[in-house]
Amino acid sequence: MISADDLQVFLEVSRRGRLTEAAKILHVNHTTVSRHISRLEKATDRRLFDRRYDGWTLTEAGLRLLVHAETVEAALLQAEDECASRDSSLSGQVRVIVPDGLGSYVVIPQLGQLRRRHPQLCIEIITANRHNSLAPREFDLAVTIERPHERAVVVRKLVDYSLRFYASRDYLAEHRPISEVTDLYDHQLIWYLEDALDDATYSQLFRIAPEARPHIQTNSITGQILAACRGAGLCLIPSYIGDETTDLQRIDVAGAAVHKSYWVSAPKDLVKMSRVRTMLDYLLAVASDL
Image 1 (spheres, rainbow, N blue to C red):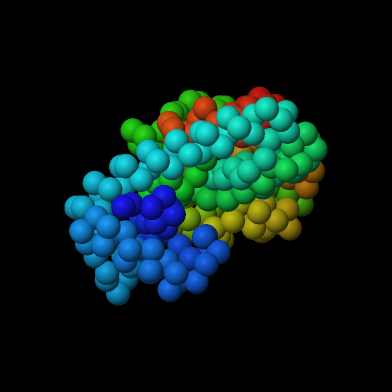
Image 2 (cartoon, rainbow, N blue to C red; image 1 turned 60 degrees about the vertical axis):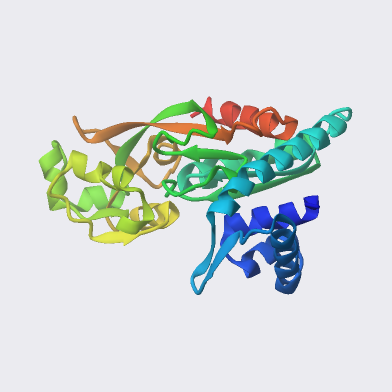
């Protein structure tokens, strides 16, 4: 007979790809995880994982079982949520993946009010700019720079925003003026490392200035902003951050801006849960002020 506990362990191993990683999430040791998987394989009379040196991958039988395991998990979560909804204060955990800039400068700083309303709610914010390999089971809500195409999620636009160039006043006073896009080539440019962004997002700088050669590159928007504030060059950042950074001055030049949108998505079987809906409402509220 298949055990619900075994299915929970099976789900974590399928998501993490390693016993040790699943064990950390489940707060048990890896031998316990291995025992659950062995028991489940015995109950199903099927090998559910291919054990490889670089991780565990699902077999065909494992993929078939995954569909049923996720259905069971969704039903349990829904039941838990409905029982807890009698109390106006939410509890449990909600995991949100959000781009670095939006997460660090907008979402996280304003979490205090939400926490005061729901002190038992555990909120996990993971800042990540690459989203092309995200699986729906890795998050409750995900804010992405590019529109996601996964079928298992509900997607809506969160907010429009723009990327613009900024530099310190001292830097601009000491260097040649910028009156058109081609003048950017005479300046020190600060941008992301190529592997820090998905290709479509990384190329935004080069859509403005095709021959641009970044002189400082980092995977952190905070690093770019601090470098620009100290006079290291020009950074291309969201205007909702740049306009609020007193040490930076916006460079308004025709054609030197990119207009983008943030998208928010949630797995279809989780979007009706109270804590997920509440977190979505929070994201919509803070984004409306950008």
